[in-house]
Length: 195
Image (cartoon, rainbow, N blue to C red; front, side):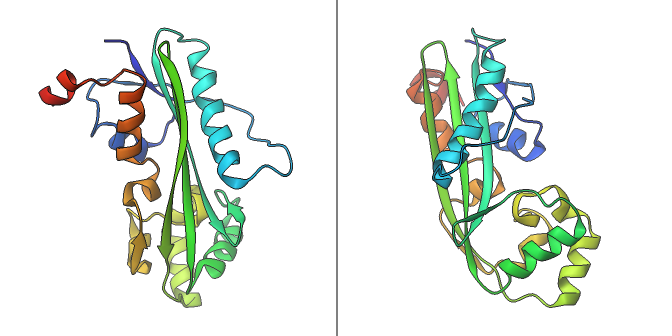
């Protein structure tokens, strides 16, 4: 079987990939994240995921490479990782008491083919007090998360519900990735039956 490479340093994505494949290598991609103006958000996210996968695939052309990128989107405006605590507070104030979308783009490149797709999950936040926002930022968790929160961590206490794929919000849709790996021939029924 060809080597499988995850082009991400995210421990959350590594954990989720481990639900599909036991044997893979982590090789984070350092790519340009600037995008042309006017690109629809879903296409922006797919483009960033593809760039990450392509950067690693270029140096490992005999491997299957996975790239992913996640954005929190509110009223058509993407929220990446906050630049500092004040930016995290701004994001959390906007998310408070309303729904938003989390979009994760996934790219799978292999010698047999390539697949690029995305998944959208709707996330509901309850109204947050200023004290709750200050407490949460003080935990440090929001500072390295898109949209300034982690659904799998302390941020879960603010989320009464979601519509869609939970793992997509964590950073990688397990079901979508499983489908894409099967489509490029990395996973086959024999392998799936053994796991």
